[in-house]
Image (cartoon, rainbow, N blue to C red; front, side, top):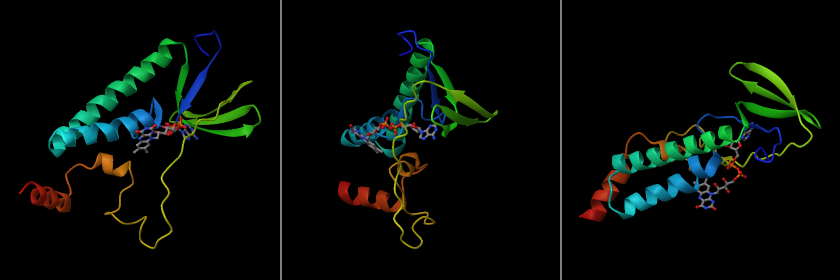
Length: 148
Ligand SMILES: Cc1cc2nc3c(=O)[nH]c(=O)nc-3n(C[C@H](O)[C@H](O)[C@H](O)COP(=O)(O)OP(=O)(O)OC[C@H]3O[C@@H](n4cnc5c(N)ncnc54)[C@H](O)[C@@H]3O)c2cc1C
């Protein structure tokens, strides 16, 4: 729409999510990790591959939008009227009005209502597990078992 001369603002709540789920915490990182594992890469090298590709694609996506004259706003948006949204950014709150507003908020993980699940340090959703700092001990022993 921006390349067709429309004034476009894109609101993304996280600076780690330009380009959305697929690039940052979905298709690309998950398949990068699977491919790295298939090639026999170890944990740190696999995570480094994943971080490198998501960082590159996130930047490319951001630069493409800005280059097309899209105003990228990093903040959380909510409707306050039919054609008006309120955006909360680190700098404060502002309102935007537009004739066309496209809602493209994606989805999030569901935490099942099982006692202790949300508080557990040993339960990960698909996002949390992609940011583990170290290979968990039980997976390590599993890998050792498989490779023996
Ligand atoms: C682990 C994983 C692997 C996947 N693998 C594949 C695959 O291999 N192939 C495939 O086809 N699909 C895959 N998917 C699914 C794919 O990523 C999603 O279907 C797709 O990203 C959905 O696109 P979307 O634009 O609807 O939402 P999203 O890509 O989720 O984008 C929504 C964006 O809106 C932002 N947002 C939400 N609420 C607000 C708000 N109030 N204010 C501002 N910003 C907000 C979010 O931060 C997010 O960046 C995978 C998903 C996951 C989680």
